[in-house]
Image: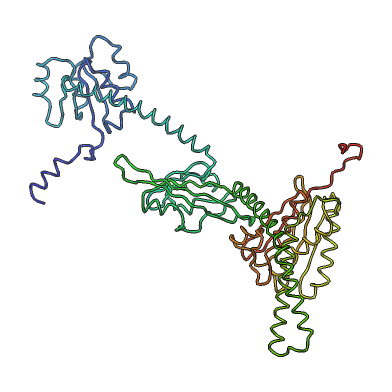
Length: 508
C-alpha cells in the first residue's frame, strides 16, 4: 500500500475500533458540567454513545459535597489533589479539567505525558450536549417502543394471518396467529421461507413449496398490490377458500424493502354465496323444466313412437334398421334425462313422516350386500341402539342412501368396505357413508353438489345434487369430506322428531 493509501486509512480509522479496551477517565474539579459528565460516564443509558469509557477518579472537589453523591454511589475514589490522584492512577487516558483556572490548564499540559488527552472546561460543554442528546434519544426510544407494542397488539388481534417477507421470500415478522399455530416460538420461525411457516388451521402446510400463483411474486415484479383466490383441502378432507393479498413496503426513498402478505379464510362466506348461487340455479332449472315438459317432450314422444313403428315394420333391414335402433335408444335416453331433470326440479315437499335411521341403514345395507357381496364389497353398519327418529320420507332417504352406496362402488371398482355410521351430533341425527376409494380433487369437491356436473362417462350430474336438495328440503344439510387417493365420506344431517305431546302443539 502506498503512502497516500495509508494516510487515507488512518484518517478513516475510528478510535472505537482500535480494540484497546476501556478508556480510563479522571475529572479534576467539580465546576459547571461536572454532574453531566459523571452521569454520562457512570450511567448505562449512555454506553451506546461512549462505549468503553470508565470514570476511575475525581480530584480537588469543591466545597459542595452534595455534588459527589453520584460519584460515591458508583464507588469512584475522590482525591484532595491532582498529584495524589495521578500517583494512584497513572494509567488514565483522559483528564477532564473543570476548575476553570487557565493557569492550571497550562501547568497540566506541561506535566501530563502525550498518552493522556486533556479536556478543558470549555470543551466539556460538548459532554452536556451529548447528555441532552442521549436523553432525547432515550425518550424517543421509549415512545417508539410504546407505539411498536401498540401496533403489534393490534396486529395480533387481527383474525387474518399476516406475515412480512423480505424480497427473497423469507419471514422477517408475523402476527400471533401464524406462529402460535405452528407450536414454535416466533423467534424460531424468523428467517424461514414463507411456505415453511404458513399453515392451515389444523396445522397442515399451506404450501409445500414456493407457489408461483401467490401474489407475492406479482408484487415483487411490479411493486403493486396484488390478490388471488386459493383453495386448499384440510386434514378432514373439507375444501377451504382463502383470499391472499400482498402489499409492497417502501422505504423513505421509495425503494421496496419488504412485502406484507395477508391470508384471509373466506370459507364460510364462499359457502353462503355458493348456496345462494345454487338456489338461483335451481330456480332457473325449475323454469327450464317447465319449458322442456311442454316444448320438447311432445315431439320426443312422436319421434320415439314413429321410430318404434318403423322397427316393427319388415321394410327395413341391415344398416337402415341399425340406424332406426340407434334413434330409438337415443330417444329413450333423452326421455330418461328429461325425466331426471323434471324430478330434480319438482319440489319434494315438507316431510310428512318419521324415519328410523338405524333400521333404514340396516335394511339398505342388507339389500346392497345381496347384489354386491359376491363382487367383493362389504357394507358394515354401526348405529347406536338409542337413536331418535328423523323427519323425512323413508323411500326418498333410502334412495339417497342407495345412490351414496353406488357412488362408493364406482370409486372402488375392485371391491372394498363401504361403512355406514349414524349417531347424534349437535341438534341433528347424522348418517355417514365412507369409502376408501379414489377420492375427489379440490375442483371436484368444490362442484360435487352442482347440478349437471359429473366426472362419469354415463351420468347427468344429478346424484349428489338431488340428495342435497332432498335433505335440505327435509330441514337438514349435507357434508362431504374427501382427499384424492384416500377416500370420501358423505354425511347427511337430518332433524330429529321432537317428543312433543299433542296438547302442547300450537293450534292450527
